[in-house]
Length: 631
Image (cartoon, one colour):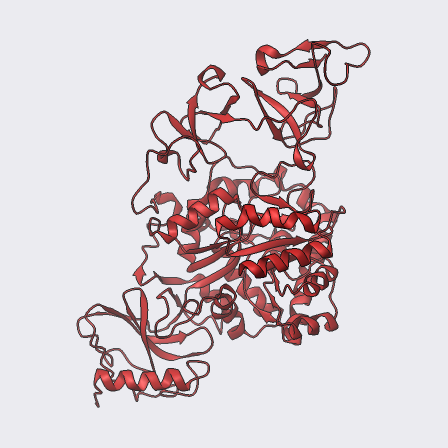
């Protein structure tokens, strides 16, 4: 058997990489050949994956992948049998019958959102759980397109510093949407999740607040609403955002659900779309315009598919006991709870979900046939759209809709990396980051092979997938943090200094058992997920009588002189509170009776007097403020 020197092999490989377009095409031994069966890899520190099929991000062929450190050292083409490659002291892994491909990239994730049914609230922060699930599925990079910005940018900073084992994270931070627009609907406090843009002259201030966080993308929301009309970003505002983003060197990605949204974005020069429209069918003419503009669509078919299957009771994943390895138990229980999914099981919702799914699949095919570039994202965090697991479902759905399997795989690897502007991700070639997924079987013949994960390498390190199963409780922190002070972002309760807890807002706060433990202006709020019980949460100082909260939210008192903007409900005097103990602005919920009472001033100096037959009962002892309720 002929042996070549390492230098000769490297020279041949260099020629292959330069000559091949794409990399695995037109160079090296043909399928079934053994011309390279005696290649020597003189690298004692390398890991050699041989004997299988390699999908490099564009093409598939018999090949051997050599990993050195955190990079791909080389890809040796040809059908080399075990024993035909010598590693010179390195680790040789037989991957016969398997496919080696780049780590997957999910271009649409909500890291903090759980995948439970609408209205389900989980007090726990599942960021680490979601991170583990993505790693176990072979998702080695992802783009977060909507999470609380102080949490997600803290997570990104820790990953970049090497403090956490995690996929590489790219983040947009808050969404730019009109007041009352999706997803910060009228009556909800935006927190740091949305930045409202109602006119072009508001763009500069929004960017001044956002750019210091160094967002990887700017996400804009273009949605007129399905079941109810929503305010829309004006075209001049979209143009102003696109211009400001271009000046800052940050790419804009648009949430768009209708053809008119696509047109508005294209008019402003925005060519990256976070969804394919699902409210209606788009025309071939619009798809051709998108292709001519160089548009890229991230279809997120998994989100409409998940809703549809959940509505029909066909979310079969829930029957698999192994799901608990990747999905929090509370989320699984919620999706199985007839009461929590009852609204989704109505005939009206089922019909709507079917239409959304069918529109999305048809529009994807229209875009693909017109030549629009396709990249993959799952919209994980939506009902039944599980982190990590949903991306392989997305790839299968792309293929089912008419995208050739090899291009569907490319959408979740090379094409996704190109959207991120990272030519060292999403591919297996010399110099690429050694994010590598090994699966049993051939996903090009059967996409379910992506579910049969054999190995995952993150930057060249083999992950212990069993240790990352949720029931094991393994920490992803390489060096756990501790001692965080008041107001500092926390990702776990253990990170805060003694006598402090990680509050529901994910900041360290003083531990409390009642209001007396907190400074004036801070309320003692209890979090059922916290081992410490209560946290002193500082209010935002909104005015109970002026009801000056942004976005139509309600100003309420929490006690100890604390007021904060809270979700606004529909009920007022004597009417029931909403499920989240919310009442209309100017009213407050009595938790004991679950009824709303109007606010009043016991001194008679501010606000409206109580209606006839009712009196203003002073609540100063509870609220710590001169305020009462009408009784």
